[in-house]
Length: 84
Length: 356
Image (tube, chains in turn orange, green):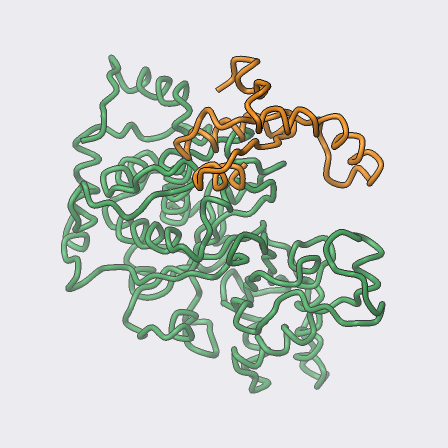
């Protein structure tokens, strides 16, 4: 989350990947950093430790959306679900 | 002044504070303006002095806010300089407070107090020092926690992501039993004078008990005590063992401290030996966790901490069989650095000593 905020602060296109369990924390960190609307995409939980194949599946399922959000061609989950 | 809430009476005010998420779940003293003003006065500082931004929420740590939380925690004026010193210590960049508050680990700031303020405030360092039953310990530690929640905005499951938490997250404050030390005080070992009051803080897990029975007929007994404590530090469930870094606290009960003292072992020697002995083989750690210690020779020795100075050795508790080891989170940019701060009393702050 903070990595995404740092990239955005430096003017880069950013999207933070946040797992389901940590979604509320993502909202909190984004708000406290003064960037409540920084784009976020929701991942299943857990990703870490789930094994290469499972992580690969998550990456395949989300990669196109990450690129689309970075290009401004798709809405991130915090906007499309009305979550700030 | 910070915004005021209104309530018809203290009972209603308490429910309002609970409902607002401003408490730790236990009843608090209602921070009425006169009570807050009294603790601001006791700090010797202006209400609007800002000690710094507290993460993860980034709230301004003004003296007034600290006093408000200290009132809620049950502090009396004499406690206030200790709470302020703790805030100053924890807001040092090296402490990584914002990150520490956000972690899934159960870390909490363990406060060790030295110097004249210990006796003045009645901070316990003997039997049951970590509680329950000691007002100053409970109130000062609780004030720090309430500041972390209400200024730093650490909310369980939202911004404080500790998976389970631990009781020390309510309050985690004790004194060193300096009179039982064979070495002088912890704060003196950190470079302070014997007449200075000091708060030393590290992020720590709950105490892990270490059982040791001394045998006065066994010349190896002091070395056995070192090995017993080192085994506690090297506990392979800890972040220290897996991350090979961070800090650790060791609370020696007076009897165990005397074992070292009688053997002519200095505090620095004990720290160095614990650092040397608190190791695991790479193979053993990787047989439990593969994600932290890199691949390498299985019989390599992996230290639980990087330097002897990363082990805080202090004397506290009643005399007997049990000392304690406090592992730490061992993460963040500075890997759980130990911080300390002088408590401003005496010439720098006369008022707290004369306010009843």
